[in-house]
Length: 207
Length: 82
Picture 1 (cartoon, chains in turn blue, green):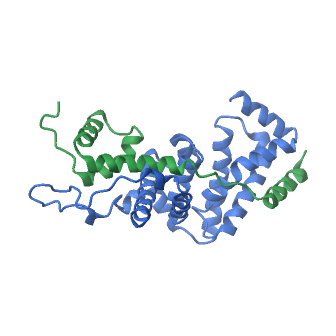
Picture 2: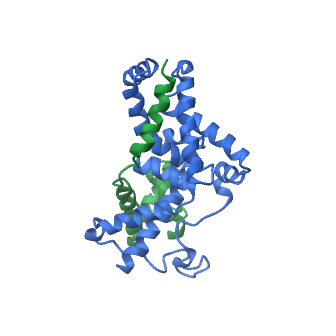
């Protein structure tokens, strides 16, 4: 266990409110986002996240540091969220989560490419991407569109891209927290990033 | 050294971008990927756009906790305090 984490754990066990507040500020929004993968409403996701903190508090004395504190907290969350999803009769997200490859999704629309039977250039660009103007990228509105595109993603993809690209987690951290295989983590990340790129492209083309 | 290796099409390449950026391609596939990028301007632009998308996403401020929610959670902690 890292020194900082050991100290944090000691503070938490001693009932240090500031240490708990710091932990809550750091992870609560991500907990809600991940919970949204399993439950159908924002309110239910908030409840799952709150329940997670109670689980954390109750389990603190048992935590042995075999995983990081972060991984442990997210494991508690996924257990609670899964139980809740079963109770609410939601089973579909699990199969989609376990094997996103079962439902194919193209990064770029097939009609942007020449036919695979094309005599000279099979599978090459028919409508090529155009380089984005640097000044449009830094514009506030572009950033708003980007945030909207992320919001519009399916919950599993949104959770993965948020943790990886906004919160800056490593792929291993995301895999452990969300209980995903390496491949599935990458598939979800790929789809999320590809859709966000496509949304930016269609916005920047109009602008 | 690109002798007799089947070349990637643009349509195939776009599906490998994340694997490439994550370092998940085999050495051989990474070489095919880079070989294609080396001679295809459109795919070079596409790869750059994916990088720009990632960089831009990284500039979004992480979601923060509302003061109300924080207070509620801290009250729960006070109730639990040993």
